[in-house]
Image 1 (cartoon, rainbow, N blue to C red):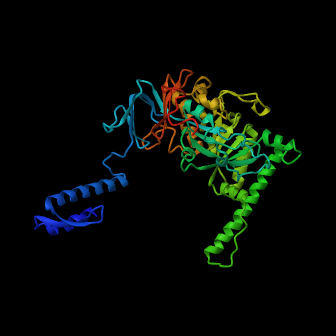
Image 2: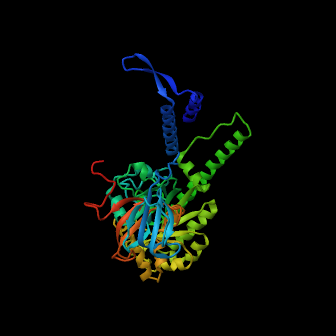
Image 3: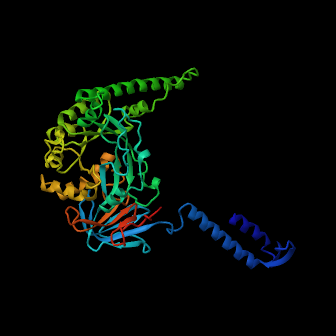
Length: 466
């Protein structure tokens, strides 16, 4: 529009003044003479204003619309390519734009001086039940794959804050272990104080919770119904998968008829439970399995091969060290405890060397919480792998960052300090793999969501009553 106006004004270039009609507030029309110079200046102003508005609308306002942050003077523990002493990280629009001893950032960038402290990726908890209140288990049927943990997500749960204050930036919130096949998980970022939907990890892959062993057979066996034994557990699971195969075939047949132009084809009745299981068989949902015993791990591997789906990770997996070769061969990760043991029969053969022993066999290992308490100090839990088995610093740190991020399916977004990843970062007051490591600042997508130096609880976005 600005260019069109300027073009029209050039028609009057030969005239020193131009008559212009205007209407007063009282409705009287007046004619006045305006100098060409005034009109040209107005044209320039209008064109410039429109250009700036257009550029801002498309994010091209000469860098002014960008959010730039630099963390400097830090011991940057990248996880993937060692430590950078006295390093810096440049964050642009919530993403890591540069990492190194020096970074090229705009002079206008907000600077956070780490003052020689440690900087790590945000901790990823690959097994959590926080923010789900008492809605963790839909214990009315052993097969409930259509349950959605997102529907139970309480974004105001204080446990989200407590985990954030412990350096956790991402969590996988899982259905409980009452059922052989439970519901679908939700992945959150710990943006405590943000609106509910902003806390959901964007475009995170879908995961579903299976559960073997004592819990399902105890829950349903106490009601004198199937399953009440391990045999019953796997029979229920296998039957559900067979039904899903039949359902999938019905829909595939219908879709094929539609593709061929069959106008008389009638769709099968939609079943949300079988639809979810069909997505498991199609590889659209990652399978996370609560399991303890090595014999059951072998059974679950065999069943996955029988029905053609992949197991993403065994959770708890306290006997993984016994069958670590088979887990590595099938690219199955474990999300395990550092040293919990003996709290139930299935945990009797647990050893604190499990994580490192399994890792040495090629298993991708994560240390997870499964606890509102442990999630606050997963850094210390990971450090135990150094004590039990001799894991290196990078290996231990990876157990609470990059490895759990892979289990959740978001390792391309978080879990290490690499260019292009989300700027989910923690500045530690003290060595992070020790009891002296305390998060000082926690950033998510480049914004500070926890700052211990702030008064009160260190929250930066949360407001009481909102």
